[in-house]
Every structure is written in structure tokens, then in C-alpha cells.
Amino acid sequence: LPLIVVVEDNAWGISVAKAASTAVETNALRGSAYGIPGVRVRDNDVLEMHRVSGEAVERARSGGGPSIIEIETYRYLGHFQGDPELYRRKEEVPRLRQHDPIERLKATLLTDHQVSPEEITAMEQRAERTVVDAYQFARDSSYPRAEAALEDVFESV
Image (cartoon, rainbow, N blue to C red; front, side, top):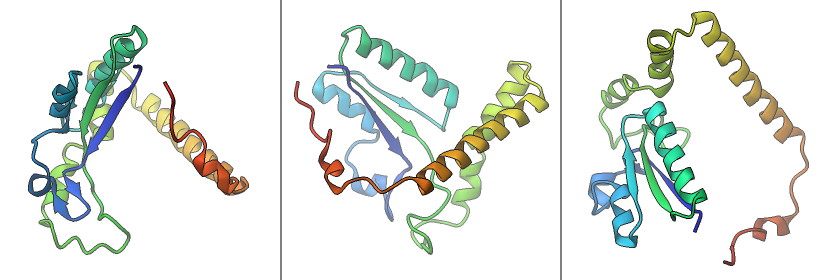
């Protein structure tokens, strides 16, 4: 089955710490219950995620079966707008920002891949333009038909 399940783990379930609500340390371990590979990518590591997902895609395309990839990420903001975040310590977010994936990738590109600061700026501008254009496209688009919510929900094999 060509299936790749990606689990985004930000260590919280709304306002409950994952450690207090989940029996397993990592969701990647759940793969063993189904006899499929499960891999955890730690610390928002963009390059490791690229490598691991490439392997999972190759496995799926070659008939090797499904995979579970868990990406450890961080939530800098509350669960909802206005969330007072009383469930976590104030020093948590500044500590987590030290592992910001975008800043770490920029540093890696500059030091290990000889990408210039100007090239980084151009990439950021292209990315921002893509987001702005996509947002505007969505705002300008008609609402979908209500029936569309039921389309492609289940897949028959």
C-alpha cells in the first residue's frame, strides 16, 4: 500500500503535555505494531526530514509498503488566539526557538553549501510571494459546494 503517515508532534495535545496523555514516548514506535517502519525526525531538522521522507516515498513507490514518519516540531504560540498558555512555562518558547528550522537551515546553507546571503534573501522573497499569492487565490475563490466535503474521503483498494 503506497501510504506515508506523517505525525507532527509538538509535544502538546491542546493544553495537555504529550507525556501525560500518550503511552508511547514517540509515535514512530507505533509502526512496529503494524509491521511497518517508523522513523522519528528530531528538532525540526529539515534536511533529515527530506532524507527520511525521500526513503519513505521510494519505499512506497517500489512496493515496499507504508511508513510512519514522526517529525518533532514546536508550537511557539498557544493552541488558539488568546490562549493564555498557563499550562507551560514562559521560558519554554525562547528555548524552543533556538531550534527554529528556518534559521538552522539558513545557517547550514550559508556555511555548508556556499549559498550567499543574497540568494537566501531571494529564496525568502519567493516563498513570501508564493504564500501571498496562495492566500489571495483562496480569498478570491468561490466557496466549494457542500457536497465536496464528502468527496475523496474514503479510498477503496
